[in-house]
Amino acid sequence: MMGFSAGGDLTINAALYNSPDCRPDFAAAIYPAVFEDVVAPPDAPPLFLLCANDDDMATAGSLRLYSAWKEGDRPVEMHIYSKGGHGFGMTHQGLPSDTWIERFGDWLQVQGLFERTS
Image (cartoon, rainbow, N blue to C red; front, side, top):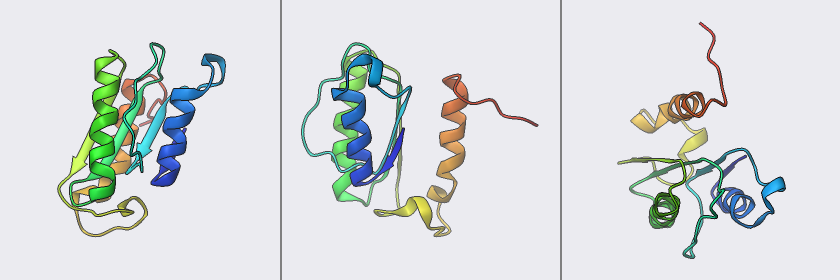
């Protein structure tokens, strides 16, 4: 499951609060709007986090989520681009954040959720 901004919050809620049989296989929260502290359940799905340092709304929440998954010894990867602002996921800006989807694909592959073809 992947969500952007407020959808990132919905993605996190699905990973945190659904019963284990209803949780997504993975969660990708892209510049999520998460404002509260969380505790990752012992069986939390792998989490991919992505935001930009110049996005004040998403950076702090992403750091809290990363810490929660890390403290729970759950798989987590986080990328914080120096620039990109909020909403960079669908807009090419001539910045390194333009290639975020490749980082996501790399992560999916490492998690065994995606197989690249040559």
